[in-house]
Image (cartoon, rainbow, N blue to C red; front, side, top):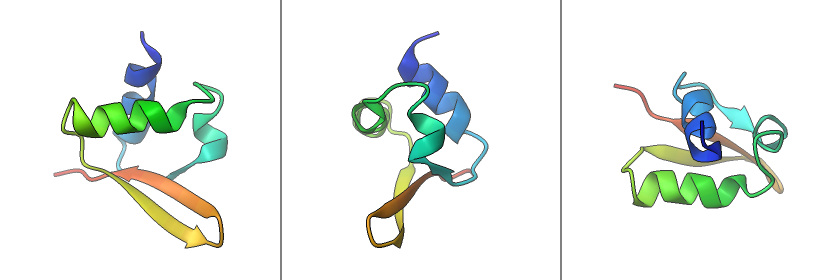
Amino acid sequence: MSKKEKIRQLLSDGKPHTKEELIPITHRFSSAIDSLRDDDGCPIETIKVSHNVYVYQMKTA
């Protein structure tokens, strides 16, 4: 399974995930998230929690 698919699988639960959860998959998780958004049309949001702290969440239907 590709790193991009692993990230899609993690985010598909619809819950917010931190960079600490994404880094073990790949240190370049932002590139994979951008690709999921742009190439695959995945509705992934970047949510600011506090100063320099973000979570990533895929909207579910």
